[in-house]
Amino acid sequence: MEKEIRAIILGAGKGTRMKSNLPKVLHEIFAKPLIGWVLDSINNLPYKNESIVVIGHGAHDVEEYLNHNYKYVRTTLQKEQLGTGHAVAQAVPMLHGYLGTLIIACGDTPLLTTKTLHKLIQFHEEKGADLTVMTTEFDDPTGYGRIIRNTKDEIMKIVEQKDATDEQKGIKEVNTGVYCVDWAKIRKAFNELSNNNAQGEYYLTDIIKWARDNQYKVLGYLSDDNEEIYGVNSRQHLAVASNLMKKRYLNELMEQGVTIVDPDSTYISPDTTIGVDTIIYPNTYIEGKNKIAKKCKIGPMAHLRGGCEVGSGCKIGNFVELKNAQIAKNSNVCHLSYIGDAEIGNHVNIGAGTIFANYNSITKEKKRSKLEDGVSIGSNSVIVAPVHIGEDALVAASSCITKDVEAHALAMSRGHQKEIKNWVKSNKEKK
Ligand code: UD1
Ligand code: CA
Image (cartoon, rainbow, N blue to C red; front, side, top):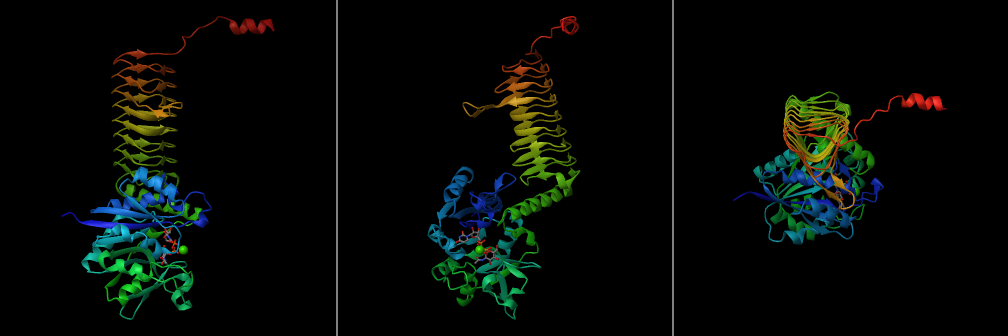
């Protein structure tokens, strides 16, 4: 039988410090909300999985986003935000009958990777733990829950910043807020949490002490990468998290054999794959899911907006924007063009300033166009979707193409050039 896990993701909090009308977990990095990054990391685990998101502030918006993008994810409403323990308690009835391994994570930690989650689950299961809390160390642990260990190095409990003694505040090992539990055992804790603490909240962290008191095996999994649990609580944090994500991915790409000429000015979403010996020039911004093959040249100043496939040996030049565009091999779009909702063949040349008019603002519909192999589009042309341009056809510069073009044909749709002899001279003389 395929291994199965479940996850509870906490996302009901307001995120007061974001100073936003948007719920915190819907703030975006590379056009994907924070909660999307967390859900994807869980989804990419090599197990059958099912997630429940606890929603509260902006519940309607979060639910709408999840319904559109993560149909299989279920939500539960936490009407009042009485603490992280109370949040998890809202998901308990939905897990009725589930007795396996469960992950608890927060919806505002977009840098948490599948790899780390996988290691946490493996550690938890290999050691036969009932509850494993992922921990990490910070030189400055301010704000985090501190991990309290006994002389045998066993985890006894977690103490929140606001409840900690001065001595406890000196502890550098902290709670990442990610837990792996044996649900059959630990679910019972959620009937027994109290809010007797400095914040008057039901703390999820109290399940550690509860588990110990009930003779369950509690372990800590120390993650050496404290960047991964970086939580977003403010716009400053959002910028830091975006930068960390981008730096991490650019390094990965360079290790895989992609040239990034200027990492500082280059932004590439981790949902984009890039083949070896492709060169990314400065000021390129790539968001969403895209596939760029090997030996391409992208940028400087290119903008890919998702749903793009660029075949090997293509050139996507300066001020070129692509969205939902599939471009086969060895084609060039070198300057100042927009290609949206289009399929483009091999060895196609798109002249400077070409625009694919894919959107009808009245019907709000987007239509696709298709260009076969060897097509050449003259500069400053508009391709009004939907059109099909046959193999090796040529579109003359400055044409507005609204009808299909046959293979091997020349299509031209512009005023013919007229010349009036001495027009300037005679007008000047009249003055
Ligand atoms: C929590 C942990 C702390 C840990 C830190 C890691 C507790 C009591 N403390 O603190 O030990 O070091 O995370 O980042 O768990 N949420 C709800 N409903 C609520 C309250 C919170 O859904 O009633 C959600 C928030 O939206 C957020 C997550 O839970 O996604 C964490 O809440 P937050 O208030 O940020 O916890 P911390 O104080 O950071
Ligand atoms: Ca808090």
